[in-house]
Length: 390
Image 1 (cartoon, one colour):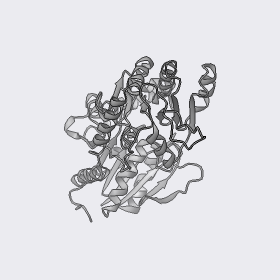
Image 2 (cartoon, helix red, strand yellow):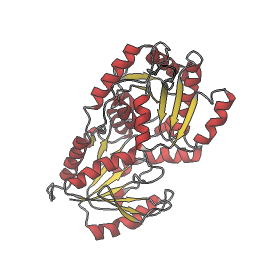
Image 3 (cartoon, one colour):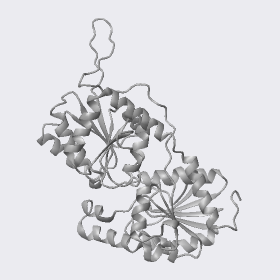
Image 4 (cartoon, helix red, strand yellow):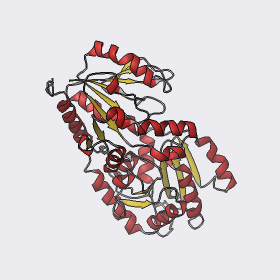
């Protein structure tokens, strides 16, 4: 089968995130099944116009602002070149209206809807535009099949006007990472100390919570910082590590200086995959404070290390985190509630251990291979004249 995927980013884009990780995890496996996948996406500084990435033929053209127009101008030409059997629109920013551009079968992949939460992220004109584009999705996609990554997103999409029978939930996979045998966090505020040779006094690094994401407003970084400010008053031995890059990162140092927290909060910036795994493995818990998520890949990445998550009770995260079983949910934006959850997990070593173990077991039930197979099954149903594997 020959498949065209349309998405604003590929995983090499500097602003790539969870949606791009999902795309490459799924479609690289579909390539491995013997199918051809072409990704039409945006260009970025230093990028090749055409490149094979994870077995996927990536075609980069134009930028964000006019990407809808770029797709309209290039889709038919690419179809003449590759003769696609089906088109997949990864609708995670603005719709590009592929059903209006081709007569080929279209499958729509969605991670989450912004709805009102976009007004907390962007200025009013931009936010209103995103909200409006989402509102008209049923006008242009009502007869199309959708794939979503959580029951919460299915409910949101159905409420928007897409019939439930056309929406299938295919969960994200969980990376196969080694499980950690011990936790870096401490119970009851007691600092851990390493075994030392006579005459030495080497100390294990201070326990820490980890916030891991692109540093955008909707990711709730201010909630995490405000929660830590509250928590830190009664837990002087604990730190917070912020890992990730983004437009708000440069504003955080002044905020920390004003509150005397510069020595308690580490701004790690962008981290490599190896650094990320090391940070996750040593954390007391992951703080996932987003106002909106389709699922929450970092939750599963933490769970693979037996690290529980303290997360906003919002669509997507309430599916990836089982409250009281694999982590703790708190009302989105409520720093006091987040701080209370941090204290609850940190001060109870038995709870921290049980949450982490349950999180690891839960994460192990999700598979990228299974997600790719389910996606391929849907694509084959959309193009029944094309048999899988050809």
